[in-house]
Image (tube, rainbow, N blue to C red; front, side):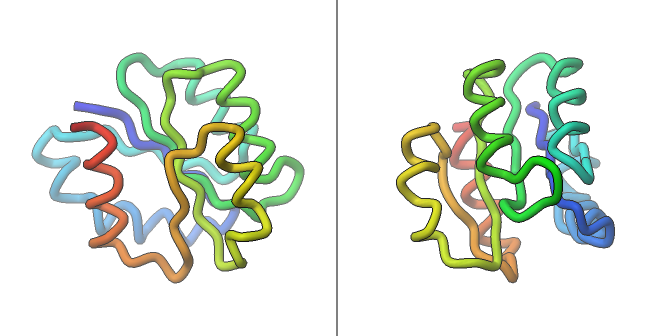
Length: 123
């Protein structure tokens, strides 16, 4: 079992994550958390133990996904991070790589591909 923390300032995205990961949650394969800000994500990470993966939107107010990735890599180096955005990844690619992001997912999210990528990180 592992923890999956999804971070997106659009609250309606939570329903999508709950729907697409419902089977895995009910089978006890993962614990799903959803936060609407990078700050709340960091609070959640402080309370979690064990393998944790963060799926973070890049474009968020106050602290964006790249800034969150930097904080996570400094405070929680064992946490794996995937970034999600509707915008061109090339703009962020070098910084994402430097900070240790495990990958990038384009919006709109293909949840089958996302699940495959997430579970490849826990194998």
